Length: 192
Length: 427
Image (cartoon, rainbow over all chains, first blue to last red; front, side, top):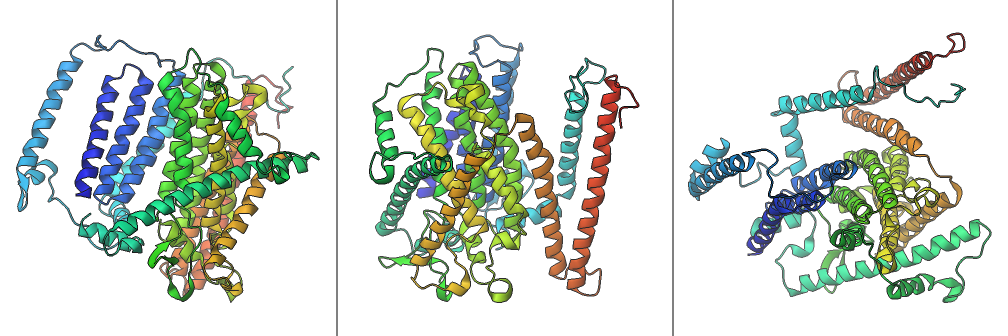
């Protein structure tokens, strides 16, 4: 009972936040409702007893990523309300609606094909049997860590490589080679 | 709640949920939350007084001395005054966000406080719980199974209050202050998290209660306490203190609110009770951060084992508050003595010093643990392996430092040559 009520509240927050992201004309308000949506997702994780995932969701998505969004919005000066009736890319909305409808059909199909003793929908959607119970009685963090460093080691290292490339790229971008001279005010460089 | 949720509750150390939720449990939870809120507010109020008084004494002034004995009620008087002041909202402000921001910064400060174990009984394997009205419970509002992460989540959410306050004011200086504040908080969060990781590594768990439990009792030699400050080798503690001070935007890292440059930072446009809320959350954060340091590194309510538990479970309270006061005094002392950092110095300290240091230390700690458990199997016994790990770590550290030094010198030399300096002058 508690589960159902909490799920309904969380789902309302998730959907309301998501609608706000699309619907608010001010980008900062949209970013705020994105945070609300992420929080709802974290609550859904907690209901499923994935405490670690829930907190990572808050730290990484609601905490770090939206802060970066807000940085960009505030510093680039695009924080003014935009007219939502004009379409920035022609045909964008029709395409979005089409793909949204396809996704919804897939998820609903999966849902109706699943149930007690029937896993066809879940298998078709995710390629895996649904895992309702924890795999064993170790703590979630232990299980996650072992999974990351054994079964998914390739994806894990690929992500690490990707982040390294991004860091190097950022450094190269700010190096300012061949551009205007940077002002040097180091001690001993004698600015005369 | 279903059965598996109960099992998780029991495993994660909430004994009062073990046999179902009844009215008494709910009352207990509400009472604990209310007591924690009151305690937190009173502690914050006293902290404001304490800071003003101590800073005054350090600067040869008297400080607040009119309202109440020793000026103790000064904060209360200021708070009441703030209620009756005019509440200005600037013309250009984003009204909704402007009103929301103070609460966004107050809420995380209080929620973090609910994680702190304030006391407890760990005699005879009592698992830190105490009995109140026939119910077993912890002296903390909630023992979240991933408490340490909850702390990190709340400190990253606290940024929003500051950031949105500056932006929604619709004015330049608050925006600059808030951008500085959020950049600073994000940079130091990494160092904070890495220092925390060392504690998690030696504890093997994320719950605050577990962290305190592993620190209770005697460690090396039966006299030295088993506190994490010693077990993790002091470096994570030092990093945590520095990063924590920066996270709090307290001096010497208070360039976020540098009056001389920014008129006051992100809260320039706030007045009346809304400003008071920011003020409150800032000091509440200070109290909470000190409490977190005590919990993570100094054993929270655990005292040195050889002194025992002469006052029963009340001993924990006394130890906790003595340690808390120590750190609060340290924060005030920082403010009274240290000059403010420049922005580039701040970023250098965070990114180039604290993060590499805590990351390297974490790896060394992990290596030592593997060697000590006898899982390395390079030399003939675990002790020799441990010494090997330490030697290799220090050798790598020295080589790394030498290479970095060389690269930095070279880069500087090239830059100076590019700027047209005489090659003979450039060393």
